Image (tube, one colour):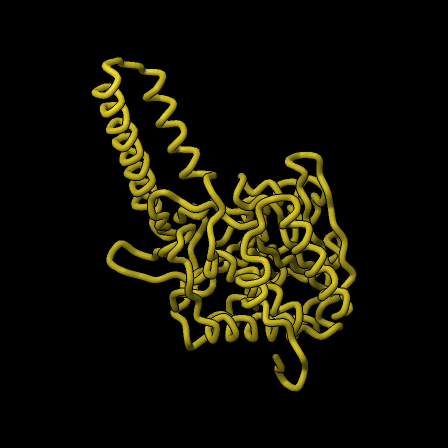
Length: 326
């Protein structure tokens, strides 16, 4: 594919067709090798940071200890859920209620299996009931690999596209990361933060969440992110996206549980739909996650890349946007 006369990688196609599932060590290794090769062709310096916990592997492009802004996404793919995995990022109460309802429905399924077992065998066993329920919970949380994962991995596609479109000058002030184990307690982001404390506590760090469905553009922010260098410029740029309805959500009013919470100046950028219950993300972690709006993702990649290009000539290492120097 060509953009502005330059041959580019169609990251949506690569993620959905060539590397649709990235859960085993072999699948992840193959994907990381491909991405490393492509990024090095673009001129990036790439390294892998390994930690013994869960054999975690994070891909880092740039200097995390001297960057002005951090951009990241998770590269592992989710499990297939037994029950629909609706998310309500802007309504913690509805989100929690839905998760409780899911747990209750699984309990009812386990009870039905137990009653059938009781009728067939003539025996009662609390251990059998608990085992069935535990197995259903395991399938709901970890389960089998899901495919496709179009919207679940759309943030990763946008991040890689932004990396491709940045000039070498703009890249010098940005660190990019692809974190492992986003589906297992965000261990990749947590292990990175333990190794890079200055970045964890002082750098504006933006996670790319799902961006392929919905024209509600959400920015979920940690409190300290609003005082970090570059914050106001990022928000101003997002407000200029006329194709989206922009909304900023403080993390305390959000149900988002993601890797950005590991960063003191962390933010989560994502797209969602909206109804009377508020913002929601449909079809994640199910076989129905088979569509993204590629034009929308292309617009977002252009806006973010344009913001980073502008930042290179405005930001100074010791400046803090929105704060007056005394």
